[in-house]
Amino acid sequence: MSALTVSTHRHRDSRLSSLALRLLEFLHASISRHQAIEELDKLSDHDLQDVGLERRDIAARIDSEMNRISLRTLGR
Image (tube, rainbow, N blue to C red; front, top):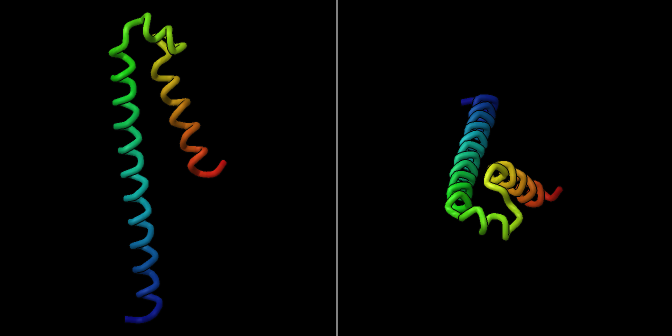
């Protein structure tokens, strides 16, 4: 096997590993988002109001917070 063939295989394996990692991260984030929305949706309207939320804003607020956390993790 030539050095070029080995290098090509390593590059392809690296891309597949990167893709698999991104897919796992996406699935984890999706599950976390769903769980957070479910938990907040269990609260009464009064409890939501106490924390500054309205029921219709739950998903948008979760998305915003997850985006903020993701950007902080990436060092932005």
